[in-house]
Length: 286
Image (cartoon, rainbow, N blue to C red; front, side, top):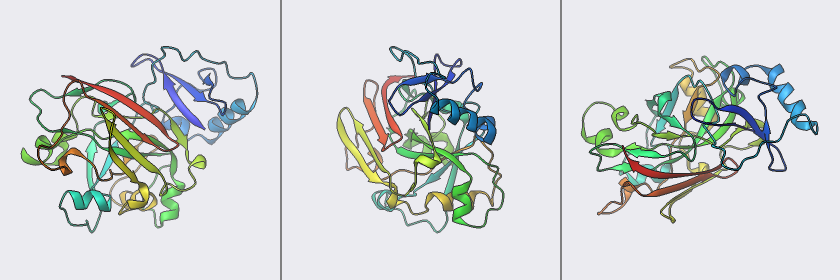
């Protein structure tokens, strides 16, 4: 299923994109798309049954309708740094022996087409297309990659916007450059795991002002999706509604020769993970 949330920011309602591309209202079936829904097999079964029954779910007019983040009440966002062989190479970094972790606050999440704000004083705002994983079952001390995959409810396109000066040159942890306002557009859809048979075979692409900047595949990941979930479960409990941003392929501004083409107000970024939907953001000054 392709689950999403539509409406004004803070007042989104649950919806579903059916196989014919029609937007359907889920608000009569479930209150929201969130961790509670993803952990409730009976509620998900009701959604599937309604989606398969003609006329049960009312159609929504998508004209002018904002698409919000596909997940509400996000618990935590765990991010994996330097998780692609080609991105580590362009950064001049050694291949990490274990996953590099940092966090993004849930309040960085915006809709896939919402405005992204360039922080005041920023000189190095950068782009990163990523595969996002959404947890559907509580995960503690998992033992195998297969168990890691079994705890995933679905997948989404994410944009891990980053301010490199704040991240690298200002001391402390990476979190300074990762948690600015609007720095995690998510969506448009949460695609349930049954529709993504191999998360290691997904092309990812990103364009800036129409120019292709990133063109990679999750096959390049150093630590594959199931291993990331397994690994994280030994350091923290993962709950339904938690999100994992699994890293970005080569092609970021930081990896380009001088003058590095960092983002500025007025730029337009478009990105997609194949099968998970496309985003488009215009940048404005904060």
